[in-house]
Image (cartoon, rainbow, N blue to C red; front, side, top):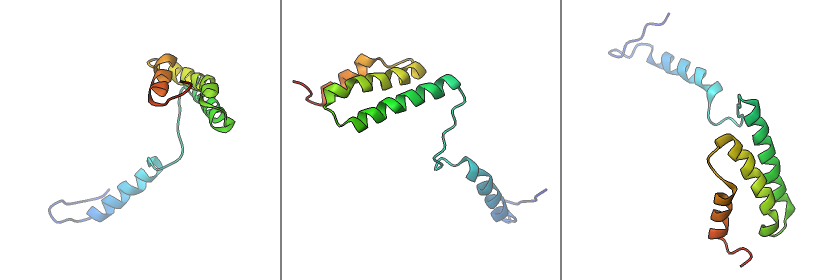
Length: 99
């Protein structure tokens, strides 16, 4: 049991240290990601592989579009909101590809 006082400041530093110590394991600075749904985990793995293929290929943008479609499809399976055409439309809208 801990006795603290806002009026006198008694044990405030101890409370702060205790709270910081408990928070360290939950830090947003951690590189760990927790995914609790197996379907989401698998979709994220597949999207990551497709994006890695896109980055590693070194091919022209119009050729890697299929890898981007795959990544978008897998992410969309989690979100259910974004379609392939919307993402690719934004990409081709911002960059002069194949025109």
